Length: 471
Ligand SMILES: [Zn+2]
Image (cartoon, rainbow, N blue to C red):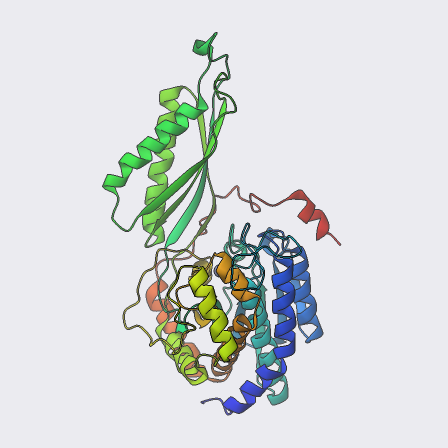
């Protein structure tokens, strides 16, 4: 404790928000709104923040209708500015009842919080409200900003926010994510580009007059083949995966339109950009060979996650102090049954906090927190919300995220975030060390948005959402 604010006071402030966190977690879980469609979820969180004294300084932030920013406090030059990230989107097809077996929800909702963003959102709120309370009571100078980060699962509101420079003035950003372990996220993730390639050909009767046609599907096949040959000549860290979304309607019609989507991942932006440029050339080559036209668009993307040692060490200390939740025998029995039904070892919930890794391992997943981490010093952690061996993005995770087990992880995460937040608000040296670490890693590499310039707003944004948030 460097702040003069005792752990007991921090924990008490977080505990006071537990009923709010519980209500939000359960309501978000019930809503299970998909990315870019989180109209009610965003509204729920904004209302909660307003009730707690925050001002909604931006809605539909950076052209993402279900994104928002809430603020509390003011910061003079030199005074701390702290950001907290919240997410609240669900995944399609992962709806499940809060039971330890694969079972549909009674209300037939088929989407589900298989990534636990209901808990992520709730705990971020708990931490933010507790921090605001402590700042208010103790006259701590500084400013808190809560980022409502819509669409983490698809096009990433944080990427739009980062492009708009909305994290640039922060001293630090805190976040957390549900999972099976209690660990500080001082690791790297893969940088990614999400690319759409369309081919435009000429339709014709495939039997009577194929010489009048030019197949967009053939262009897609050639493009995919070219990408697969390219694989031999990229570094082993590259991950390129694609689907063909449209490839014609009937065999007796030469397809005049075809579309593929691919994800290009690698250890950093430079690698991803080099592969993307090559893939765009392959698409052009495929179009040339088939006398069709290609249009490639980087419609989304993300940076690799930038570690930050001083922030990680600070958060690790709080993670170890808070520890993992303790569970009732009934909860452990639920966990073991869930594990058995999901094909995992029935070993229950995580029992201990993971040590802080000395190296900074690189993982193959991607997150739009990566973009934030290249704009301001950023750190997050995990707390167990599912039993060991249960992966995110599964029905089993959705089930657990609707129970008290998930909620306990959220409460613990809120305590870690709030305590780290107090340190950042009160410890000038910590903020300076975090900034110095950030500068050392990021200097000379200014943030450049992965989005192609023509991407004004997310590709998959439904019309009805624009109308629904227009009030
Ligand atoms: Zn997630």
